[in-house]
Image (cartoon, rainbow, N blue to C red; front, side, top):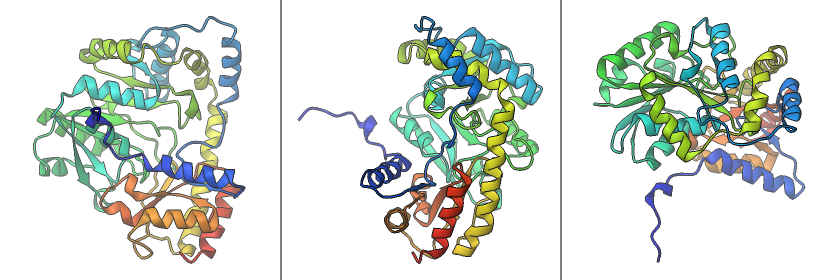
Length: 379
């Protein structure tokens, strides 16, 4: 038998498994209310679509591995406008989605055998990408007592670390790190020689205070963002990194060899995204209405133990009074009601068997109907 590399022996991304089951139900003629997927239900902004149509008449060849100068400059201006930060455009790296950004960041910052921490519940692909690269993921269980976020004391409790991945707003909990707490965490990482990587792909989608970028705290952090969430461009596969000067050349060489460049059509179109704020903020207003609807209706269905959902578009619900097998529970929910949600095992391999994630990024009428079916279901 031919050898198979161990790198692929990682868990699946279970939300994609749920999406596949939902698609199979739809192909068989069944109705599905999609509360499983972490993507906007809306298309790209009208200005982006128009820019893409215009760009189709151009020669769409390879572009610079770090991104087109126009898009890198537009992203740098975004940091000036949104955060009042003077960011040099040359520190911006355009990536093939945030996923490509994570691969580049992890390869440039860590060697095989290094230890990189992240919280659970948290986005599973951090853990799975690090594992595939031979880096050791160190999971830090968190809960309401720390706002589902790491603290310096929790870092010390897990031993020596080479890196820490944080997300604010976070997937699946929607929790956020305030400015003071983020400053303390960044200082603790600097003092301990821990590389801080900040996942900021849900910035722009908040329901109170705006999110704080880690770039306010230090030039040595790595920041990731994406056009997929606030900018509603999931399938365009476009994201970006902001990196320290010291990592620029290594990331450039990695990008040249692994990806050549992010999709040129997406880059040409994405420059227009920053001029579409009114349309995009309208989406966030809809998310806020959906969130309020679920916060009112889910407790009527017995789902009243929820993470804070200060940002992003998810509710993370404790269903331990219903099941200790969230995967089977979600399968049954889909089969009996047509409501698709995601089992918590994606986000917390241990405690996640008692949790589910509910996305409220879809149309409000679909969210309302799903809530009605959850109230009526005796699962």
